[in-house]
Image 1 (cartoon, rainbow, N blue to C red):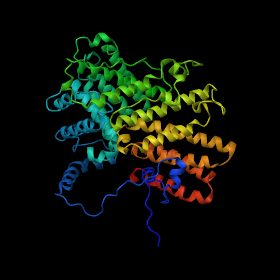
Image 2: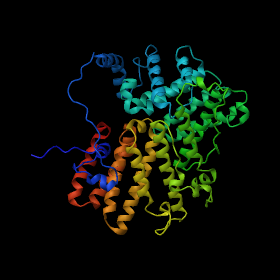
Image 3: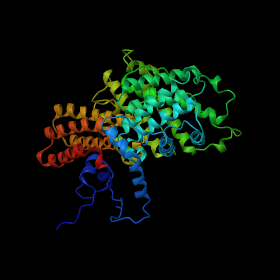
Image 4: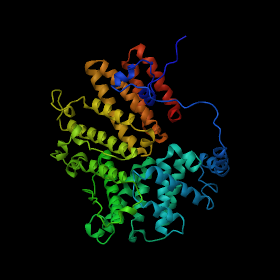
Length: 490
C-alpha cells in the first residue's frame, strides 16, 4: 500500500494535483519553487466556551426572515435592516472597512469615522456612511454571511445605495462644501462596478470627479491654511479618483478628466504627524500605487481610447521591468494591488504595441515579442503565490478583472501559437498557468461568476483539443470539478 502523497505548497495554493515528488511536475512546468512548509491544522473537535455558536444563533434569529425574503426576490424587510438593527450592521461594516479595507482606501481619519457613528449624523454624513456600507458589502461578498448575516450581498448593497441616494434629496448635495457627498458618489460608483453595472459606475465616478473639481480639490489654493493631516486625506481623495478613473479608462477605452494626480507632501516637524492614527507603511503604499498609474500619461490614453491613430507617448518607453516600482515596506493588500496592476499595465502596453505593429519574433526586448504574455502570466502567478489570499480578495472585482485580462490574453496566445506550431511542452506549461489563473479567479464568488466560469470553459476546450489522453483526464477532472463547485472549494 503506497504512502499518502503530500502536496507541495504551490500546488496546494494553485489547487492542482501534485504527484508528491520533489520537485513535482506541475511546479517544474510553471517554473515555481516546490517546497512543503505548510503545517496542516489538527483535526477533531475544538474546545471552547461556545461564544461562536451563541453568536451564530443570535445572528440567525435576527437575519433568517430577511434572508428568506431576499432569496424570494423581495426587498429586505424588518430584520437586520430594521431601524433597531441597522446601527449595529453599519458599525459592523465600518469595523470591516477599518480593519480590512482601510489600507487600500485610506480616506478618513479612523477616529473621526467612529465618532460619526456614535452621534446623530448630518444628511451628508449619513448618505456617505450608507454608501460606504454598500461598498463594504460588495467588496467583501465572500464573507457576507459573517458581515450581514446573509449570502444575498447584492440585494443588500443595492438597498444601501438606494438609501444613500434618497438621503441626498434631503439637502442640496451639489452645493455641499465638504468632501462627504463626493465620497458618497465615489462609493456608489465602485459598488455599481461590483454589481456589474458599468454604465452607472462610470456615471457616478464622473459625478464624484465633477464635485471634486467644483470644490477645487485639484488646485493648491484649496489646501492653504489646512493642517497636514486634513490636507493629506483630501489629497488622497482626489488621487483615489485619479486611480479609479485611470483604471476604468484603460479597461473600457474611455477618455479621462483628471490628467495627473496631486503630489502628496512629506510631513514637517510641526505638522502634528505624531497624532496621525495610521501605520506609516499605509501612506507609502498609497503613494506607490499613485506612482504606478501616473506612468500611463494622457497621450497614451488618447491613443488607447481611439481618439488618436498614432501614439508617441513616453509610456512606450516603460516596458517590462522598467514599469515596476520598488515597493518597500507596505501591507499585503497594498502589495497585491500594486504588483497585479504593474503586470496588467505591462500587458496593456504590449497590446498597444501589437496594435501599432511593433512586435517581432526577433525583437531584442522580450516585451516586444509575440510570446510576452507567457512572461506576464508567470510573473503574475509568482506574485499571487507569494501573497495571502485575503490580500487579493479585499480589492473586490477590480483586481480580478486585471487577473482575468492576463488569463484571457494568455488563452489567446495559446490558441494562436498552437495553430502555428502545434502542441509543445511550452504550451503545456502555459495551460498549467492558465489553470492556476482560473483558480485564483474563483477566490471571490463575484469573480467566480463573472470571470472564472468563462475562462474555465476555454481551459476545458484546450484540454479537449490539445492535451494527450494521458494528461487530459486529471486536468479535465480538476476543471469540471471547479466549474461545478466554484467558490465553495475555497
